[in-house]
Length: 227
Length: 247
Image (cartoon, rainbow over all chains, first blue to last red; front, side, top):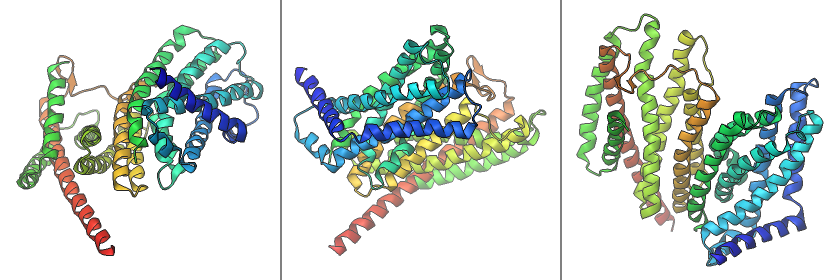
């Protein structure tokens, strides 16, 4: 068991070190998320802002999904280019430990991007982020776990196909529909300061999704690593 | 779980067995039975009275509902054969999963085409974001992803493994998608065939027509899958011979 956790930590540490040295993924993710937030403002017109929680939440999560896909495919692209998958297979580590390592490091990337995204939402769209910080953090946490669990599995998969990154959103987005719906609905409730009664069911749904797909992805990850 | 759910579940496995069996004669009988029930179903579907409220548009129901049933059945079979493949690594299971996905995709497309044709005169709109419509659309998109993933991979063994994983995760996802969209909003007419406590509000002749259509579509589906599987086996043999010749 101790070995299991040390493998997880080793993978996370390696990924974070690579990120700190190159600063490749996070920068692109941040810029991309800000860009999507800005583009929506142009698409909907300059009058947007204040009291439109459904639109704000929708914009936010679409931006987060797009930006997450970039982060995931970059993270797995690094593994492909440096033959990381082969190296992982050579270690005596449990494939699910490798999965959790990659998943958590991807989760950290997405979470950092989301913090900046929420700040941008507060500034650009005058969303009530500060007032409802706790509830929003809970929603973002539950949704991001689901996104990074399924995303890690399929990013590892599509990184090894012929057209690589292009395929990832096509495979991933239909599977993430429940996360998007629940995250948007819960974010709307949180932005309105509605409390647990209105967002509880959606948080529970996100929790159920997270548990099911962490289990399913951790079990099937070994079939992706094989050669 | 009621009696109807049990019968449904049992029929899933019976169908899986028929798809799986190698017996050559099965195809001939399937084709014969398929044509016979299809003829009966078409006859019944055309000559049974429609409901006054919906008029002739109601008849599309006999194509729409069986197609929806087949598209979910096919995805269930993709799941079964994907699990089998990952356990026993038998290439035949991968080919079966692929055939089910391809044929299922055709029926899922039929659902998405016949649905709006019916909805336009009855609901007044081509499309609404109702739970069942949306679930069918997402199912269709997962099918597309499955088939695209396969078409962009060349290594046979790796393709089989990857698509099996997608087949399993996708199948687990569909009920969750349905639930989340249902909470999101819903408008579709409620279940009229089976309600808890027995048969729903459909008049008896319509029941016969619908069950005949369901049976006919199922037989035709199994026949298609079996022929598609045989074709894929031949195709792979051809590829092997070609690879051997080129050395």
